[in-house]
Amino acid sequence: MMAPSTEFTLETCPIALTPATPKGAIILHAVSGSGVWGKGVASEIGAALPAANIEYTSFCDKNKSSSSEAYPARDGVTGRALLIPPQAQDAAQGAPEVFVACLFTSYGSGIADADRGKPPLDVRDVILAQTRQALRDLRLQLDDMAGGGAGDGGRRSVGSSVKTAGLASPPVIYSPKFNSGAFHVPWEQTAALVEEAFAGWDGKWYVFDRLQ
Image 1: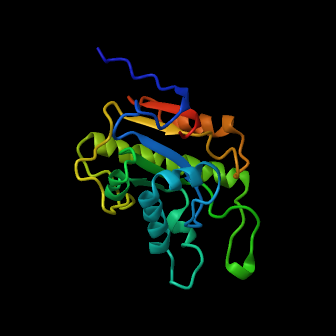
Image 2: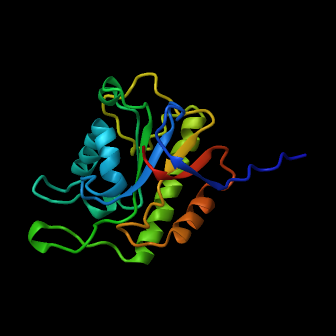
């Protein structure tokens, strides 16, 4: 007789980073290819975890076709999930030992600026398609790590990670209502994609009101 599959549902919590946050938890947010965590929750994550921010910027830079390009190649980042492990520099400054998952759900943000090589925010249908792809990518990486693999799939950042860092057990993700702010996608549409991609997952996913 087959065991029933785990029922996955999104839950809520007021604050993500507290003394009770498990070591190895994942802080997840949506990003573009700008290489900058400049606004909203992204800027808060960057302030709390500056070494992780550097890893995100480095990942974007590595996917540029040339050093003169302002943005990485579109097919190098969109629809991908970058999973940054806890960074030693952040831990040394007293930051929590958490992973950061960056979902590349839009190539650009805001209004295009041709003079600076800045692309505009993708249209909603494209953002949703790239969100689905990035969530599937993340799920594959997490399942691989749970099975004892490295979990990178060529995508995870390396950096100077905390050597003993591993995912919390059971795994837990904290996210804002990503895509619903600067990317202008109704949360209900993104939430449906999360529940689709993580159906049967044995971890917890909390949607937070504030980072800390």
